[in-house]
Length: 538
Ligand code: NAD
Image 1 (tube, rainbow, N blue to C red):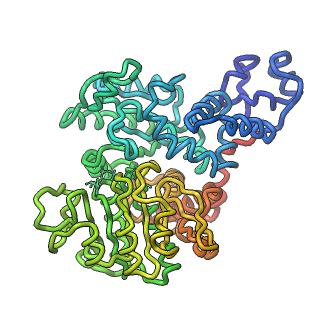
Image 2 (image 1 turned 90 degrees about the horizontal axis):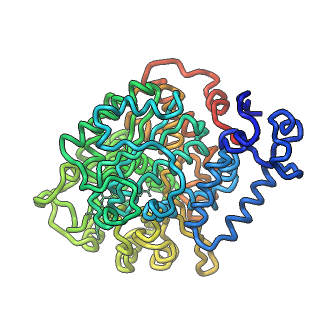
Image 3 (image 1 turned 60 degrees about the vertical axis):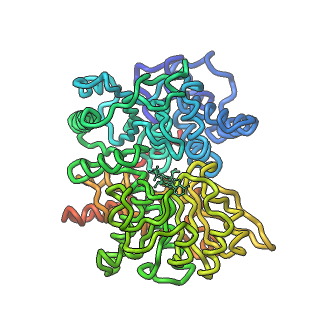
């Protein structure tokens, strides 16, 4: 039983989300905490409370209403919220996270009820360390921060982007068991270039164009420095920054701060895991694959960077590894002769003739096609048919989020490949039945990776997060996919296994950290990890 602080009794206890059990307080607890009269007579179990919550959620007409309802539950009874999330992950994840969180961010200022998380604005320059002292917790271990400039595939949502750190940290507590009080969602509000938002009377962020350049970097530097002084054990996860900033900040801090960028590194590990699992099904060696990306932003480039490391770990030279990785962006195939490429694109711009997307598929005959363009319906029928013409079992991942941005639907992928595609998407798609067969599309959801990475890195006190930690996590995730799951078309394990998968990843990541630090791996590591996890049962 969670120890309720002595001073917390009566209505104050019922209003405290960490300790509140509402109708599940026992007779003895009602005596002890002065709760008689404040609760109806019948004493519920947590399971009975979940039944009631589910009934309420399912009765609602729209997912956004379900999101609001779940946020209210989180603010009222934390343990019930997390128990629900863990026990009903397939139903709850799309509500608490993508795709519904996308709409929640778009409407953040309109559905806002009470504040959650921490806001750092450019007006806080020079006092970030001090104002962090206003946060009520002294032992923060995990920080997810966004500046809201590229929320999912939805663009600049300014301070509305706070929904993302809140959602991600909920997943950390549910699936990696990081206690909620150790989690800090942060919105770095530097303005927004989204004029619609700035003109919305209910908008809650700074109404000014975004800060950029050296002043922006100085503010992030100050924040990172303040965190390291206030919370020296904390891991910082950067989330949904615009690509140049995402890379700029990652490269600025990765060698000296315990941090990572989930859009670049987390996504990369999820994609790599899906490819590694798919290799078993298509019976090909990973190092023989050719991969074509649609989209050349932070997500796709992050995947290519990690795939390159993975190819090199299989013995390929850097040059040979890059030759297996090709990109098409909005202007066609990335080739060396193009003059419009960003620095992160250069290493993958090969000496080749320019080509359209379809021409590139027919020329390269890729084994794997990955969409991370944010451009919906770009995997057209001719595209999928071309993939299927060149490969017996084409590996096709449409990873753009939310669902409305997916490069194609699961149904299209199966239909146009005559049921041969090994398909995965970023946001969930329902199983598809075709010609008497049912396909279960995998969901390349970062939620498979970041909780385990974070937990493993924290347990082993990683000083920084190397590429090899992400390779390790990807392999651990791929190993969690059973042959039966692969045979049904899934390159990821069921979401229902998320907590167990996260633990397995955390163990392997922590082991890797110990090896990197040349420290002995504790014999009891799995038990230590499992026992340290927050358990939301009463
Ligand atoms: P970004 O804006 O940095 O990059 C987008 C890229 O797509 C650019 O290179 C652009 O040229 C290209 N592009 C845009 N429209 C195109 C078109 N019609 N045809 C070809 N290329 C086109 O964005 P990002 O951060 O790389 O994210 C891209 C998408 O990936 C988003 O939708 C995001 O939700 C998704 N994503 C998914 C996951 C996941 O599923 N695990 C994780 C992170 C990001």
